[in-house]
Length: 129
Image 1: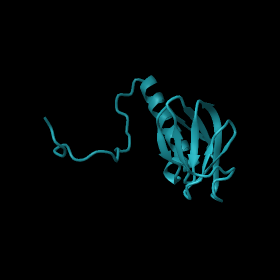
Image 2 (image 1 turned 90 degrees about the vertical axis):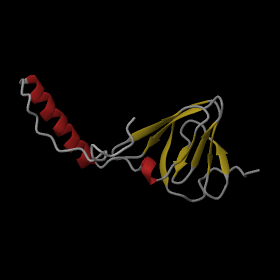
Image 3 (image 1 turned 180 degrees about the horizontal axis):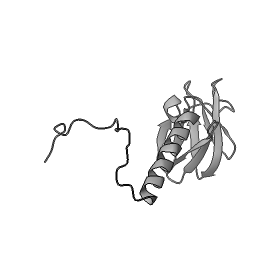
């Protein structure tokens, strides 16, 4: 059985529990477990496990401040891919693009010049039906 501890085995604090229902625990990389409560700290590399009755909202430190919502019977490792957030300049660029698109649509401009997306393969790629 895992020991219960108040810290995340010395890991970097990356956020806190914002909202919690039911049973949710955090397991540190060294195997120590703790039952979470509102305002409990969340540490880098914690494994968050929600029970059959559990759900949680974790608020990550910013900037920008972001959050993660998990439902019941969920398990996730809080690594940099989860808490890293988005750089403020990326958010600013996206907001500027959205404003540009909205202005063009309101002006009736059907030719909106946008940067090509990076997702997906060539049209011939993939396994069609």
